[in-house]
Structures are given as structure tokens and as C-alpha cells.
Amino acid sequence: MANTTVEAINKLMDKPGAIESFFQLTVHDYYTYTHSVHVYIYSSVLTREIIGDENEALLKELGVGFLLHDIGKKGISPEILNKKGKLDDDEWEEIKKHPATGYDLLTEISGGLTEEVTQIVLQHHEKIDGSGYPKGLKEIDIGRFGRIYCIVDVYDALTQSALTRKPCRK
View 1: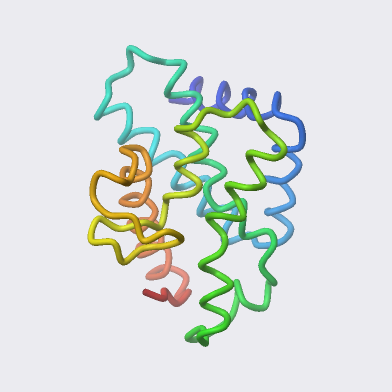
View 2 (view 1 turned 180 degrees about the vertical axis):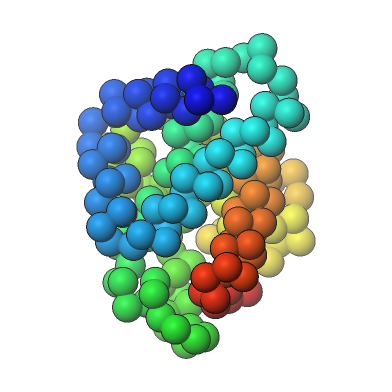
């Protein structure tokens, strides 16, 4: 796992502008940064269990998407990201934009990323019943890696909010 992590980060460093965007997120919102690292690890382990480890190149490529899933949050004000208590409707609408913003950012600065990687970023808040965002996709319209990531993303958000008392919304 450690070698895969290092190789995925090295692959990320080959993408112009991507690593800078990720580290800007550290300064912008440390919770999102640590959440991204947690979910990268969980998703990588779960994906390896589901698809096996024969396709190491795919696992490394997916690791980039797993790590960068919330990169679109760097455009959201820290006041919204770190707000204590419930978000109002306008703030919630801002939050809901981050998957599409992240997708646009990655496709702009890293045109060499695969569709599977960019779909992780775009689809990580979609839900099987269609109640997710940004597109309200249902069932098989959500890619398999987007579905894996959504499960892990929710798990980490719930366990971390219990530890940090950071409120969850929807």
C-alpha cells in the first residue's frame, strides 16, 4: 500500500498544476485536506479488494482521483467550509458546486487524467436513489469508482464528524 501511495503521488506530481492545487487546499481548509488523505487510503484499500491487484497501473491512476476528490472546495470560502452549525440554503448551494468545479479544474490543468479519475471527482456525492449532486445521477449512471468513493467519503465524514464535532449536512 505504501508503494502504491508514493507512486500515485508521484504520478500526480507529473500533472502540471495538480500538486500545487492539492497543497493549496492544505492552507485553504485543513479538514478537507486530511479528509482527502483518509478517503484516499480507504478507497484504495476497498478498490483493491473489489478489483484485485493485478492492474497496478489502474489502481495508481484511481489513487489520483481518490486523493483529489474535493479539490473543487478550494474555491469555497473558508467561512462556509468551517462554519459551526447548519449551513443556510445559499451556503449549501455553494458546497454542492465543488464536484463540478473540481472536475473542471482537473480537466483543465491535467488533460492527461483518465475518464475514470475525473468521474471520481465529479460523482463522489451522487447517490443510487438520484438524490445526490451535482447531476442527480441514479444507479448504473454512476460509475463504479464513483460509487466506491461515495461509500468511503460518507464513512469518513461520519467518523470524523463524530471525532471533531464538525456538522454534517445531508
